[in-house]
Image (cartoon, helix red, strand yellow):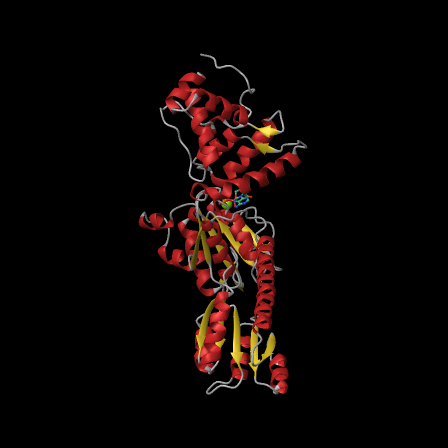
Length: 456
Ligand SMILES: Nc1ncnc2c1ncn2[C@@H]1O[C@H](COP(=O)(O)OP(=O)(O)OP(=O)(O)O)[C@@H](O)[C@H]1O
Ligand SMILES: [Mg+2]
């Protein structure tokens, strides 16, 4: 890491002398001739350490120190004091200076002081980063993912969770929409109140209505007692409306009213009930298209979709595959009481190359079945569901993005071998490498015993 230092002193000689000296120590150095300019340079950002004189025209060193320390706690500021002004130095220390040096500056001492200050700053920053990562890990424990698209999702969750805004989570089947809804509730001030989930597609329209809003005794055949609806149960908490794209027009109108007025009546009831509910809805349908087709109300759409969180499909975030595979492997090995340590190269390549139309859910099921199927401690390509096995009969070698060079080499060699029906001499010829080289590589990968002869 290269550090950037700021030297503030109104005496040109001292300022430039210090800057030159520190530059020789390997730092980037900026200079400023007075406190005001010093503050401006600092506020532009990325300064790691400040060295400032105390007595300067305009904004004094004292003031500059206070401003810097209050704006960026933890930043080391070294103050320079004239001879015999120890009180100033003491005040500066009290105001948060890292240390002080008396003029004329002992350069060796300065060098050491700067080095030490930056070391401890680096440690503090590293520590803070780790803490942040840990915090993030805890919050999103259930949602595995470190890819950029998932980071964006986490970011949005973090920003919207504390608000009351309605959120529409969209994305293909099995991408983790429900997990996102859980995280939003968990990170919201409502986390100790209920999170109520309604699976809108699972219920017939009339049942859904009474499920959502409740009903009075005798309001319809079978309504033997008064029942409170999910809107009431979710009071002060979150209501998760899953598969919102499936609800019927009649309920869409009622839902719209609750969202607008925060009021509703139970089915067959007269009393108006008020409920303070945060709505999170999810769908894998394209609601805009449903609006165009006249299946979904546009006004309801806008009410629900104050913030949209689009959870990207797995094929657009293959970087998450290794973490997901490892987590599911561990989960199902434990669940099945099996010792499964890993997944072999070929099976991995198949997993990487697959499109995952069913997304994380499909991957999860795939790993589960592989763990159940496998006979040894390592999952091989034969343990995978047939849909996944690499097809190699179209004259192409397919190497998915994200494959390492080493892995790619293996795939190329193996697929060429397969295409040559295992004839190593022919494969070597096609690859334009020596037979010995091919032989050695295969031996290295444990594909054949060293010293095995070529079958011509
Ligand atoms: N990022 C992830 N990390 C760990 N598990 C995940 C992740 N995403 C999804 N899953 C798991 O995959 C399965 C499907 O997730 P979830 O039910 O949240 O998807 P969904 O988007 O709501 O799907 P559907 O559209 O079918 O309702 C669940 O078992 C869930 O735990
Ligand atoms: Mg779901």
